[in-house]
Every structure is written in structure tokens, then in C-alpha cells.
Length: 55
Image (spheres, helix red, strand yellow):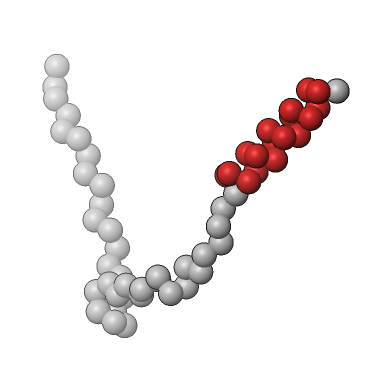
């Protein structure tokens, strides 16, 4: 019976210590512009292939 109390106490303490504090993130978000305000975003460059060596 003591094990059940210890387990319940452990779960309760873990939930208290590891719970998250909700904070509003809306104020921290700043819009980022890329390549002008209304311009199109260019595609990424093609991947480079590693050089091949002949044996």
C-alpha cells in the first residue's frame, strides 16, 4: 500500500515540476520579408554532386 502512495506522490511532483507555463507568443513574432515585400521567392540552387574519382 505504501508503494501506491509513493508512486502517486512521484507522479504528482513530476507533473508539478515539469508542467509548462503558458505564455503568449503572439507579441514576439515579427514578420520577416524575403526578396522584397511582394516579390516571389527564388527557388533554391540545385544540389552539388560530389566529384567522382577514377580508380
